[in-house]
Length: 189
Image 1: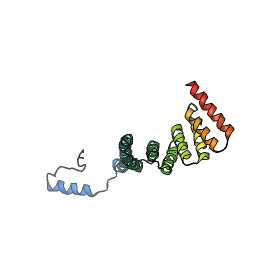
Image 2 (image 1 turned 45 degrees about the vertical axis):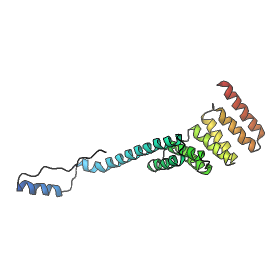
Image 3 (image 1 turned 60 degrees about the vertical axis):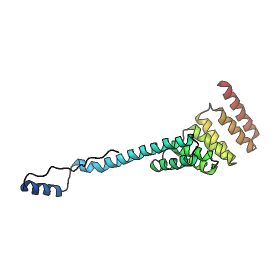
Image 4 (image 1 turned 90 degrees about the vertical axis):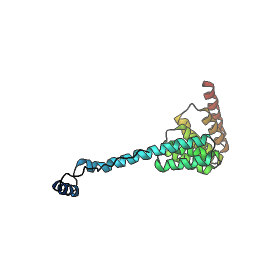
C-alpha cells in the first residue's frame, strides 16, 4: 500500500526571529484558492475511489458467480452497490445470482433496479420477464418482453417468451402472433 508523504513538512527555522515569524504565519487563516478547492478535489477523489472500489467488488463477484459460489457473489454485489447504487451491471448480476439460487423475489427486485439504472437494455427487460413468468406474474412478464422486443426486435426468445405469457393470460391470437414472429426472426438469422 502506498504511503503518503506528509503535506505540511517544513524545515526547522534558522533563528528565533524566523521561528516566531513562521509560527505567526501558521496561525493565520489561509485564503488561497488551493485551500478552498482542496475539499472539492477530496470529494471528487472520494467519488473516484468509491467507483473503483465498486468495480473491484463487481469483478470479484462475477468471478464468484462464474465459479457458482452464489452466496459470496451476492455479498460482493451488495458491497459493490453500496459504493455505486447506479450500477446497472451490479444490479443485473445480483439478479442473476438470486435467480441461480431460485430466489425469484430478490431476483425480481434486483432486475427492477437494473431497469431503472439502464432502461435501454433489452437483456435486463428479458431477464425481468423470465422472473415474472416464474412468479406466475404473466401480465408483467408480457410487458417486460414487449419492452425487450421494442429495444431489440431481433431476439426470437423474447417473442417466444411473450407468446408463452400471452397464452397463460388466455390471449391465444396474440400468443400465436408472437410465436410466428419468433419463428420469422429465427429464419432471418
